[in-house]
Length: 149
Image (tube, rainbow, N blue to C red; front, side, top):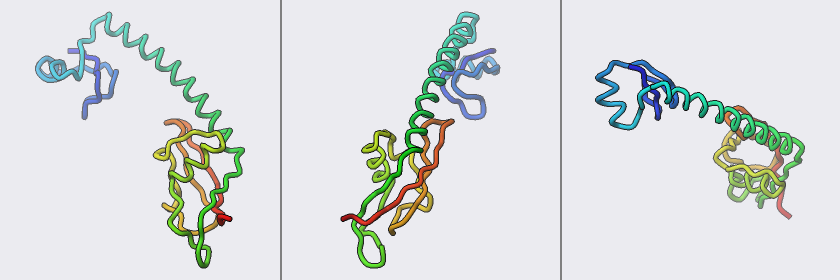
């Protein structure tokens, strides 16, 4: 029995995959739970059109992400923080602070897509962060943590 998966099914396949399963598994589990539909000729044709549209949309999303990554690469980012003795910060600089600093410079990115190498920052200096704009577009950001004046 051929089915088109509507959701990811562990040990079977991912969304929009066409899979072959035993009839009982398909009729009694996958179809009633909304995990799959029958792979008729019309459903396969509709799936092909959906995948084609999704690929076109994905291509435009990748272009937009690359444009943002290029814009970010041109930035000289400085994050100011209050300091105490020996260049130690009061508190720390987190991914939220990096996200806010990028937003002020015109690059909107959610903090969950930013990863500071080494974790939160507790001292002044130069640091690196990995930023994921898209599943296929990652960029490296180098920024400075400076003393607030």
